[in-house]
Image 1 (cartoon, one colour):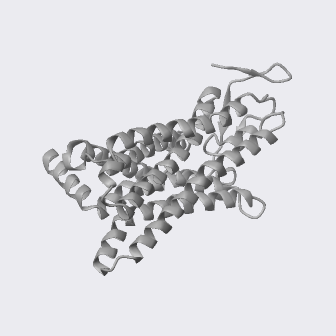
Image 2 (cartoon, rainbow, N blue to C red; image 1 turned 60 degrees about the vertical axis):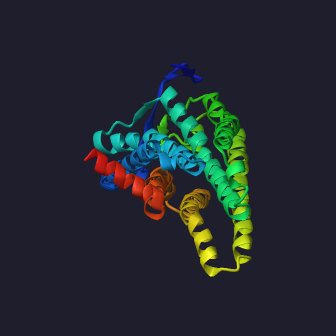
Image 3 (cartoon, rainbow, N blue to C red; image 1 turned 135 degrees about the vertical axis):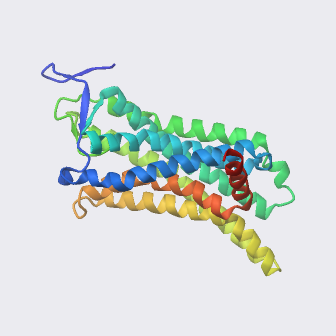
Length: 314
C-alpha cells in the first residue's frame, strides 16, 4: 500500500466516510431502498447477460452492445453500493487509501464508458433507420469489437489523470470524507495542497467526454427523426421510432439524473449537502436497475429469450 506523509510525519493510510453528515442517526433507513434496488440491478443484468449468451437469435451486434452496457452497470453497482450498505448496516466507515483511489478510478472511468456505449448504440440506431440496406455491412461483429476498444481506451486515457492527480496530493489535514463514495473533489479538498488543477481537469474531462457524447447522440436522433418524417407510411414511421424507444428512455434517465446531480453539486450554497450525495449514489444504482428492465419489457426478442431461459431453469 502506498503511504503518504503529512508535514508532521503522520502516516495517512485510510479515510473515514461518513456519508450524510446531517443524517448520521437516520441514514441507515436508506438501505431499505438501496438494498432491494441493488438486488434488482444485479439480478436483472445477470439475467440479461445469460439470455444474450444462451439465445442464438440474440447473437447480433445490437445485443452485444447491450451486453457491454450490462457489464458496465454491474461493475459500477459493485464498486459503490456494497460499501454504502456496509456503512449503513455495520458502521464500517473506513476505507484504505489505495481502496479509495481505486474506487475513484473505477467511477470516473466506467461512468463515461456507459455514456460512450449509449453513443455507439445511437449510431447503431441511426444506421438501422437511415441506411437500412447497408446496416448488415456496417454494423458487424468487427464493428462491435472496434467500438469496445474505443469505449475502453478513450475513457481510460481521458480519466486516468483524475485519481492520479488526487493521489499525488499531500494529505495532512482531516481524513473524514463527507460523502458515501470517494468522489474526486470530496477527497482532494482534504489535502493541504492546491487542488485547482484537480477541479479544472475534472471539469474539462467530464464536459469533453459526456458533453460530446450527448451532443452526438442528440445529433444522431435529429437525423433519425428527419428520416422518419420522410417515410410515407405512418405504420413504418411508428415501427422505426419504436426500435429507438428503449434506447431513448435509458438516455433520458442517464443524462437527466447526471445533469441534476451536476447542477445541484454546483449550487451547494442553496442545496443541502445531502442532496448531491444521494443523487450521486442513486446514479450508480437507478440506471443499472432500469436498463435491463426497459429493454426486457420493450424488446420482443429479449422478452422471449428471458421467458425461454426461465422455463429452462425452472
